[in-house]
Image (cartoon, rainbow, N blue to C red; front, side, top):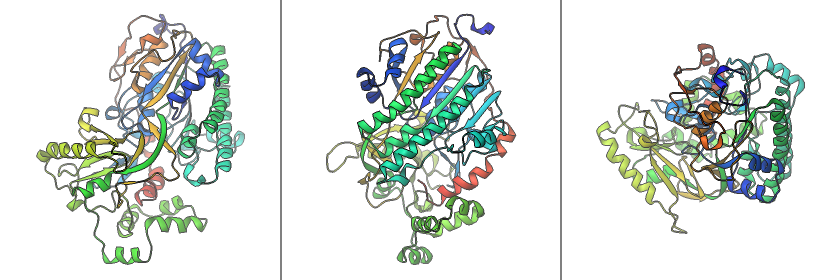
Length: 531
């Protein structure tokens, strides 16, 4: 045991991440005795809601959990970052600017954590998660571990696209079960390594399931599978004498309608769509749009990502501007646009200093921001009269970053915000049954954890997770953290110690490795194929 751990009972922490767990459901099932291993956590440790980021999304919340800071410090606001020329690039591990738990606790075993591609050269083993193009040498550290996965878990996949299963519930549930089984096989293989201080492993399947199926019986069956996995982890952490933390990046809840932010901006005169040039008009009349082209490519059995990957980026960008569609960037006339939306819930004012075709002077930004916040806050559903958006000032949410979104507009219960161009502000959610909510879950159990009544620790947020974990194993806290140690759930009563850390934690080799990923995912999204 390390000298820094003199006030704690273990120097090991196991973080079991479960994407998109709704607190209200898990709480109810625990009290009903449906999930015995989750009940063990609640009875012998701590269980409480966990407040997510704003907006509550995977690409922002998992880095916040891992670093203990909000997005304005770790640098990741979404799957994509917005450039000065309105183009987009996928965010990767190279964009995270603050150290994660696996940089501070070593050796570490890290599996399937979103936004970790390309895998970092950590002291230990890493298999990157969501946004990885595939399980290849860049997705694992050491690189040769990819071959080991291929040999021993040949059906291992990064994830499933739930949208491809609309109307095929049985096939979807079967494939999701197979996905979880393969993920569990990887976790079990990593468990064979005894040399670790941090074990951080994430299951993303609940998020996929709940987007398509919001049904208590179906969900409970899936959570029973996760409960069985949790039982294995509890037994394992008991054997290793480790603290166990179970966290979700956000919660979940049903939706019925989409709210198109770009339509609001256009209706109010702040956004202009690209005029129909002769080319765009002719293609539109022929029914040739970005969506129909993508559909044709798929019907031919050609991987659209591969097609886009083989094209030079300038050609892709030019093509995207000529083919009509509803993309919130490529189909906007920025020379006539005061403000625009960028996924999933960010609104930017088109100011002259920030953007190449900006038309708003920096002096006008505050007043325009107030106007827009008032408009979005007052937006109501004409069928119910209910307000539909929670609106936040980007400067208040992200005070340390001058390039953060100007406004964040998040759908309230029953509504999900969208940034695509559309004729109507409201439209049915269609096959999407549910989406993200702010209230996720936090559980803790182990030698350093003090047992508390269920739901007895208020106001815990995702940025509190990392400092709490570090303090539970006697490690000093980076002085840059935004979160606080939740002393209410820890047995030790000593004050946390602080330490200085380097801001940039990604080496040049990691940065170079992102290029092939950008050429697949970013260009695919840039064509409007993915929102």
